[in-house]
Image (tube, rainbow, N blue to C red; front, top):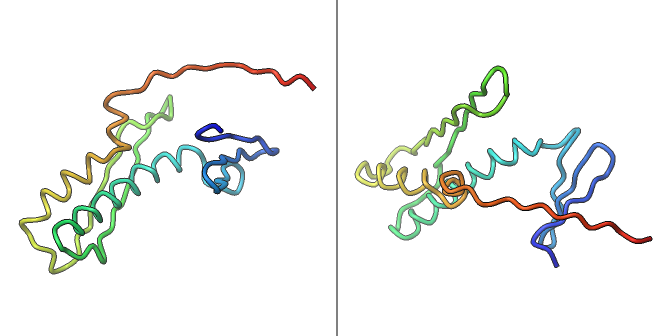
Length: 125
């Protein structure tokens, strides 16, 4: 079993992993939107873990993400992550929470890019 299988279905590509199917393409999130969502949700879950460990409530915590793209290449030139902290959250916990969550596991992959390899298998009827 592969970690993930991608199946083409017309103008959609479906990612199959665990017992889930994630649909991308026309009428669904684009792969790039899912990439940005993975950064945000990873930061949010890391923040939730920090709060749980410190006995703090993460209720009301929100992360807004804005992406600036290079006009020619359309590649992301800047990804801005804004942590919206709920009222009453301890001031002394904000900086450590943002530092930890802002450097989540998904984001770390951007600092040390993995090696990409490609293989081809042709089905025989």
